[in-house]
Length: 206
Length: 93
Image (cartoon, rainbow over all chains, first blue to last red; front, side, top):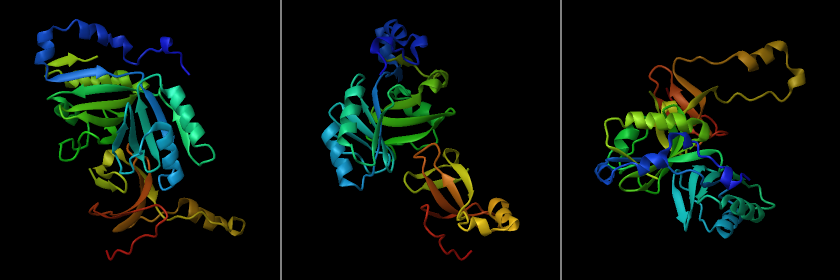
């Protein structure tokens, strides 16, 4: 476990909170794109066989989540989410600080099963891309069709963006997207997003 | 750019995938009886058809699962996508 007071987000060097505080209210209201970081989340990689009722029940008891079995879908329960990553793999997302307790509860519930829960909270950060221009910006680098008939809130996907492997999820209809990217690629991806958005009116969202 | 249908994620762009070469090559079980020529055949010799090729792909940037593809090497048409372990489908081309 990493002590929370020593944690430093991968994008800390960009000084995003200070940039956000320096924006005029008019600029924020006028923006057609919001960019921001959503770091330090509880992230747990979960493996198990969804055909096994005991596995699904153990997860339901431990996290209160019904795991999505349809590919590239997100299930939410309270403050937790489960993102489909593969036919026997999910990513559980929650507010930072819950990871140690939750991974322990899951591990106890899954004891004796061919299943596993791993705390991967330190592996990646999440970047918010939201607003009227979000789809246009992402279309410059993502090979997926993000038109609402294909990709909507509650959908997720793993793909590539600007050379980085990412997890993409849409969280609302503004539209808002969240991009999960490994810490080592976060700096590069933020540069790419800001440069790609050079024609748009960008507000930093914290 | 090929559009490849991952058995789990559906149609995705070729750049999300990695190629795994010819499918259905089983490692010999009677290894102590093999001649050098038979070993060489297992290790190195691959089909190079002008027509349907049965090959493996992995959805490397997506769900990271392996599967088989029947692809026409002239037209790049993907004629079938099927799971690992399944026999190759009969295709009359």
